[in-house]
Structure formats: structure tokens, C-alpha cells
Length: 322
Ligand code: F6P
Image (cartoon, rainbow, N blue to C red; front, side):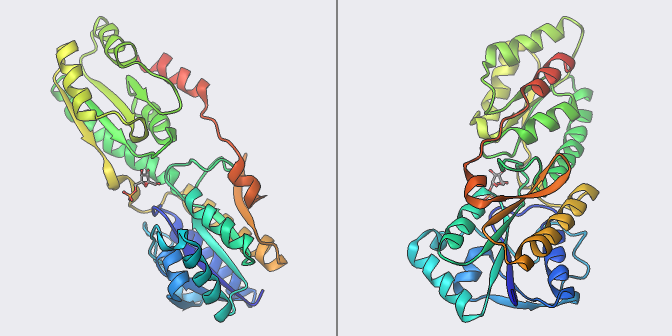
């Protein structure tokens, strides 16, 4: 490979910059030209590229967001958009593309791969919902941000003997809610992967703990369950007598300086994508972490894999946070 391109796509995630840096630096020190593609697949369609060198990724390892900007491209989802992107790649001599993003972005990479442009995916999403990976870049930072925010919420919740229902991100998954819920000691955690009943799993649990003299409560809800947290807080107040508030954390969860874990994982994955795959002319792959090791999967296989939440971890949470 003589020229590769790198892009970030979908919802941004802290650590994406560290991954871009690793891709660019690994390519540059090995004599490969790198183009940075701006705004995800839109940039690939429109030829919105910047020539990258060792210094163009200086001072970004510690920054949240993505220097390459990100987008969810509606045009790329069409055959016409895809063909335009292929044309732009060919015109610019791009031999391979590194796509940093979530599973939607990987589907785009799979489609490009199928049409002859070798792609390598690097998992970057706060949701940690990519089936082939134990871990996705941004997840750890996001968990720590949620924990920090909810610790603050706890202070005021406790001072007022209240219950606060906190909604955290996770479009279709409960990894953030489950692990953050454990870290903040939430009385109830609602996630899409585990069936729940508000009466039994929230109201009755609260009433049981009230009998042990507990006076303030945190309930963590994954956005993916589709529960309106304002209505839930009202209902909790009516049924338990505990004054309740709702808080939707929102996009604050997606920003901020990446943690050590995210910077290191992003650096390892970015290096692997270039050194172990594209430089060996291997494309159509997803880089993944498995039990601490960096590995790769065929992109088609990766997208057909299933990931299951750790039900025992949920059991632990329910047994301890009472
Ligand atoms: O996929 C990451 C994520 O932050 C989800 O948790 C959330 O549902 C979604 O993106 C929000 O997307 P947007 O930034 O487009 O509102």
C-alpha cells in the first residue's frame, strides 16, 4: 500500500484522536502516505482530504472529539453515494481506508470492501456495543464521566433525601448503564438486554430498602430501554413518597479528555490496523480487543457476531446495591 486514508464516522468518542494519531504516525514512519478524510464518509464522497504528516497529529492524544470531524452520512448509504466515494478513492490513489467508528460505520466499510476498496475498522463508540470486541474506544472515558457526574448528583440527592433517575446513553445497549450503575451504587438499573418490571424492579426495591432506613436513591436508566425518566421520577414520588427528580446526562457523556485506557487501546489498535493489516495488504478486517489482546476479524464475520451482556454482573449489582 502506498496511500491510505483515515476517517472517523458516527457518534464521536474520546480516544478517536489517539487512534487517528497512531494510524498516521505508523503509516508515516513506514513510508506510507496518509490522507485524513474530513467528516466521515461525506469526506470520502466529496474528496475532502487533508495530507497528514507526523506533525499534523501532534497535541491531539489528550483531546476528546475528533480532529477529523465526524458525521453519519445519508448519501453514503445510497449506491450512488458509495460509487462516488469509490471514484474519489481511485482518483486519489487510495489503496486502503481505516474507518474509526461504530457498527454503522463498519457496515459502510464492509460495503466499500465488497466493492474493491480494502477497509479496516477500528471500534470507536462510547456504547461498547460492537459484537466482536470486548472493548470499544471511548467506553472507559464515558463510564468515568458518567460516574463523576452521578457522584455529584448523589451529593445533592442525599442532602435532600431524594431519588434521582439518571438517563445515560446507549442507543441499543446497556453496557454504560450497567457498569456506571454499579460504580455509583444505583438501587435499580434498567437496561434493554434484561427484562424489567418497574413495579417490582424499581418501586418494590426502593420500598424494601426504605425499611432498612435508606432515604436517598439513584436509579440508572439506559436510553435504549425507551423509558421516559421524567414520568418515571413522578411515578416513583407518587408511589414511594420520596421526592424525585430526573436527569438526562446527554452529550456531556461523549466529550472530554480520554482516559489512560482509551489512549492506550486507541494507540495499539491504530498501530495494528496499519502495521499488521494494511501494510501486509490485508483489508476487509475489523481490529478488536479480546481478553486484553489486539486481534482482527473478517469484517463480514464481525458484523454477524452477537454480543451478550454479562447477566451475572447484573445479578451482582442487584445483590449489592440494596
Ligand atoms: O452511538 C453513540 C451515541 O452516543 C449513542 O449512545 C446515542 O444514542 C447516540 O450516539 C446519540 O447520537 P447523536 O449524537 O446523533 O444524538
